[in-house]
Amino acid sequence: MKTLYGTCSNGYEKLQVFRLLGLDSGNSVIQKFINETYHIENEFICQLDPAKFDTIPEYVILECDKILQEAGN
Image (tube, rainbow, N blue to C red; front, side, top):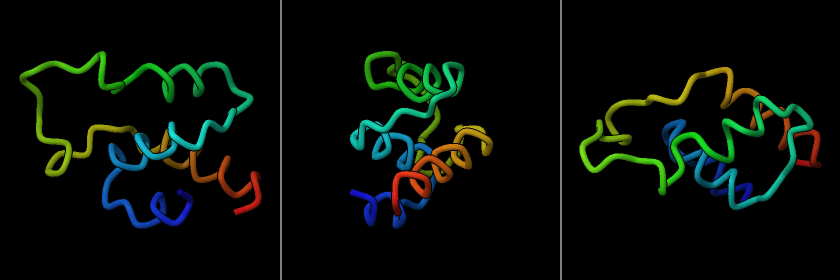
């Protein structure tokens, strides 16, 4: 899963894979964003194509990268 995370081409894909890893950030604000924002159940039928438009804030992806490194990546 960590290899798949590293090969993702945008933040949306990374966030979806990161959720599958089930890691805890230790930061309740970031964890809430990871768990709930851009979740498949919260998405709209009409939205920007996540493959073309990277709508995930960079600081969230950087935090996910950090959590993976701390988990032994």
